[in-house]
Image (tube, rainbow, N blue to C red; front, top):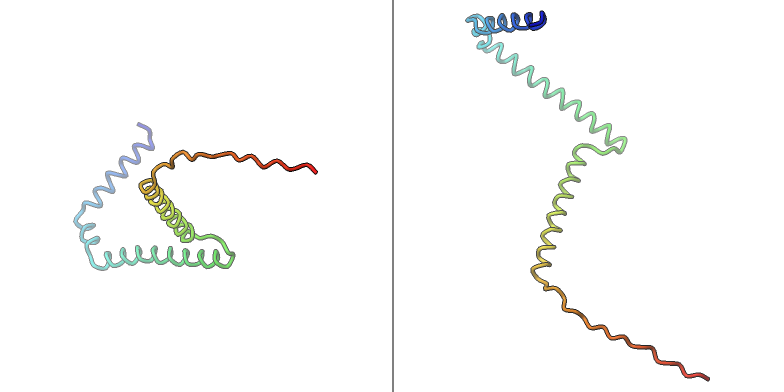
Length: 114
């Protein structure tokens, strides 16, 4: 076992002891800590939304394709593929293979010589 692995093992055991202590459990169960954690999670989500909105605005100004545009296009293609499949199935059930069509070759009439 390397020295780094030993340090990791000792650190993991110490962190486990701290997390299992009564003091830590009391702190983590307090409403203030819970509210702070919820606020931190919400802040991250809000920051992501702001960045995403900014990227969409820049993409629109530069006439670039966005994720939403690609997602809409994928849905449209998928829907059209399903529609084509349905139409092919309907066509195959409605039509029987065409019977052999007899083609008569008509020779052009000979021209009269003058």
